[in-house]
Length: 226
Ligand SMILES: [Zn+2]
Image (tube, helix red, strand yellow):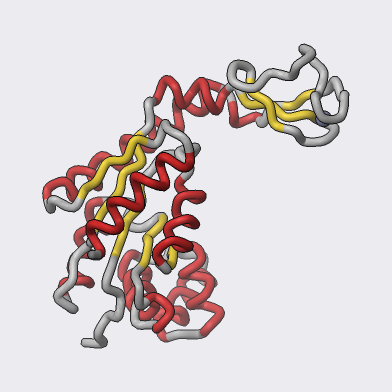
C-alpha cells in the first residue's frame, strides 16, 4: 500500500466552460512537461490496461454502477507512480467535491505531499455570456464569427466563402451559458474554499488573450515548482 508517488507537482486547474482550460492545460504540458490527467481518460486507460483498480472499475461499470471515489483515487494513485509523470500532473475533472479534495489530500499525504497549486481561471460572467452567446459559424465553410467581436465585412455574407447561411450551436445561447456558469460556481465554490484555506489557491484572470493567460499561468507554475 505504500508505493511512493513519483509526482512532484500536483496542479488542479479550475475554470468554467469557455474559459480556455483545455488550451491552457496543453500549453502547460508543452512548457513544463506536465501531464494532464482527466478522470475519463484515467478510467479508460486503467480499464484497458487491466490494472487492479482498473479491474474494480470495470466490474462496477459492467454492473451499471457508478465508479466510486475510492476507485478513482486508487486509479490515480497507480497512474501517479508511472515514470512519465515525473515532472508533475494537472488534474482535470477531479476533485469535483470537497470530499474528493479531502480524499486526494489523504492520498498525497501518504507520500508526504500536498496539492502544489489549485489554479482558478476567473471569468467575468456577464462578459462570458456575451462572448459565448454571440458565436455563429458559416454553414458552408465553418468560418467562425461573433455578433459583436467579429462580424463579416458585408452583413450576412461569409468573408471566406461568400456563403449566406449561418448557424449557431443550440447550447451557445445566453440562458444556457448563464446556467452553466451558475452550476460551475455552485460546484466549485467548496473547492475554492478548500484550497484557499490551504494557501495554495491562485486566481488567474481568464478574460485576457490566450497569450496573457499563458504568461500568468507560467509565472505561477514556475513559482510553485521552483
Ligand atoms: Zn463561409
